[in-house]
Amino acid sequence: MDKIARIVNRAPVIRSAVTSLLMAIECKEGDELTIPLREGLLETPSRVAKAFATWFGGYDVDVPGLFKTFEDGAEGCDEMVIVRDIPVYSHCEHHMAPIIGRAVVGYVPGEKIVGLSKLSRVVDAFARRLQVQERLTNQIADAIAEHLQAKAVCVYVDAKHLCMESRGVKQVCGSSTITKAFRGATLP
Image (cartoon, rainbow, N blue to C red; front, side, top):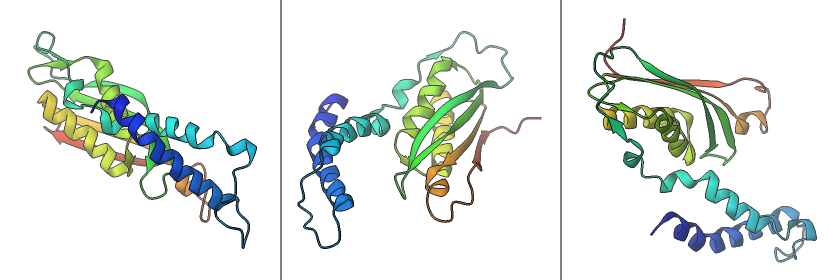
């Protein structure tokens, strides 16, 4: 099933679930959970279904297919190729709250190089899934190491977790979490 068909097929289920959530949130103590949605919320289930298609679209990405490689250009390259400030938009799998940050991805080419935009696409493919930052960082590093046969890989993710900042004690506003993953040779 292609990505569009999958999203279209799941939209009714998502709309129904969001409608139920909205009713539970909006109802007062003692109300039936079948109260009609107020006018401002009538389109919300459809909007959420569309947003989820974007936010969680990483499940539909063929990660190995992202690695269009070139054999010319890798000769004599023994330094790390780095792409920095790659946007990270993800959601915490524990609360479905946003994780927002930046990634830095570097690799030392083996026999081939990759189009630089593909490194950003790999980050985005794994970020657009329910995640924890530790897994996200390692998935990116493992995919690059596996599909490029790179001599070395380094991934650095610095992100804010809204599950920490917007709920609970809310004492970590402004802080961020850093995760790193290294694969391959140790560099001097």
